[in-house]
Image 1 (spheres, rainbow, N blue to C red):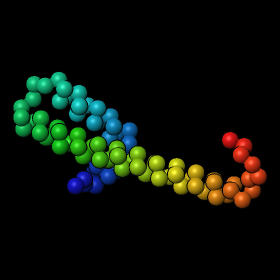
Image 2: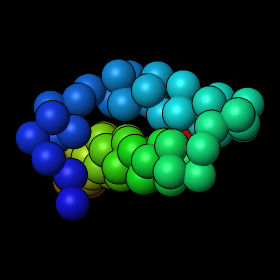
Image 3: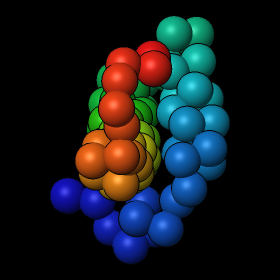
Image 4: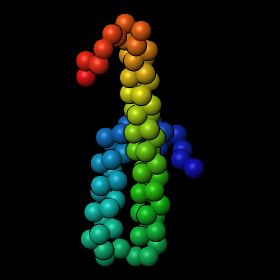
Length: 80
């Protein structure tokens, strides 16, 4: 479960930190305990990013649905 700090992270912040976590894991040289802590942090950051992306997708879908609903009855042909 993520805490208040993770919830306050913006998408770009979470993504950038996730990139750094992956870089550190790929570089190696960490203890098993450090690697596990990095992995867990990466999982938390990935969830934060996923929530941001899911929210953005929902907003886009809602905007497109609203646009279609507003344009639907007025359309007379297939102008696409």
